[in-house]
Amino acid sequence: MTSRETTTTRVRRLTRAPLLAAATAAVLAATSLAGMPAASAASFNLEGWATQGGGTTGGGSASPVTVTDSAGLISNMQASGARVIRFSGTISISGMQKVAADKTIIGVGSGATITGGGLNVASVSNVIIRNINFRGWNDDAINVQYSTRVWIDHNSFTDGSDGAVDIKRSSDYVTVSWNRVFGHDKSFLLGHSDDNASEDRGRLRVSYHHNWFDGSNQRHPRVRFGNPVHVYNNFYRSVGGYGVASTCDAGVLVEGNYFEDTDDPYHLGEGDSPNGSLVARNNHFVNSGTGETGGSVASIPYGYSLDPAADVKSIVTGGAGTGRI
Image (cartoon, rainbow, N blue to C red; front, side):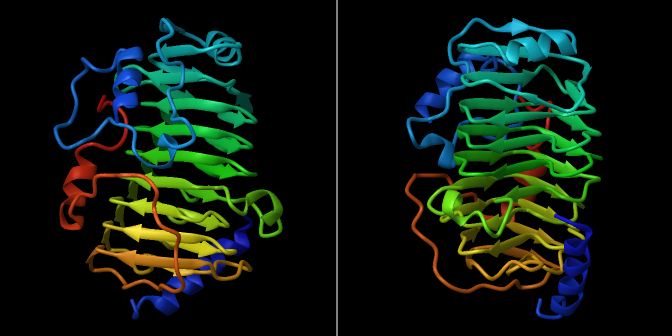
């Protein structure tokens, strides 16, 4: 979005402040994560929309390949066929680099970092991106478009140019879980344009859970058309602009989240975009506004584990981001 959104967000914040699972085990085994130490509170199982449509397994049981530089990373993630790609240390890329179908891209340890550019998941299916620090990207850190069955899990995002994770253009069946966003403005955009209803209505179904929005500013997420979009068990700390915005016929369930020092936790409409629908339940507020709700949201079709909202801060800060798996 343009800088106009940021201005509108600030006005909105100021004026509203006073109102204020079995398949996953196979994936873990295939990516050699099952034996790694984990924070006791964190879950590493796939939940949410990415379990639908046949499920998301990425590279599955393909033998892992370890890469050490940008050429190795790019050639492997653009190769045909199933592939599990592992790396450690820092890899610098330029621009938006395409990710082919049936890929798992996973950082090893706490220091695996992609800087300079981003990953473009476009017109493919079945992709997993995990345990990577994204820093200083010049467009989006992760862009998902015309793609289905995508899982973005246990990454961290800071100091980029545009969106951390943008999901748009008829994408569907996506889970964004256990990520940390800090030192950054635009976090998670869902649906890129008000006039793209013909492609997006009935799709853009995404689950956002156990993410840590750590002083980030806006789009946590900003939603167009997707219904139901499920935002649950996330921790919002000192969000500068707004938490969740539902626009353009979207239906968003905001459930079991923890909002701390966040004047505008959720609202309807954003910028020039018209109101969507938003239902909020069982959220926990500390020194935060009460949010704005309205309309109805389609039912959630999958099973999931909901942590008590009052426990979400400790659970998420103990388990989100890189180096946990």
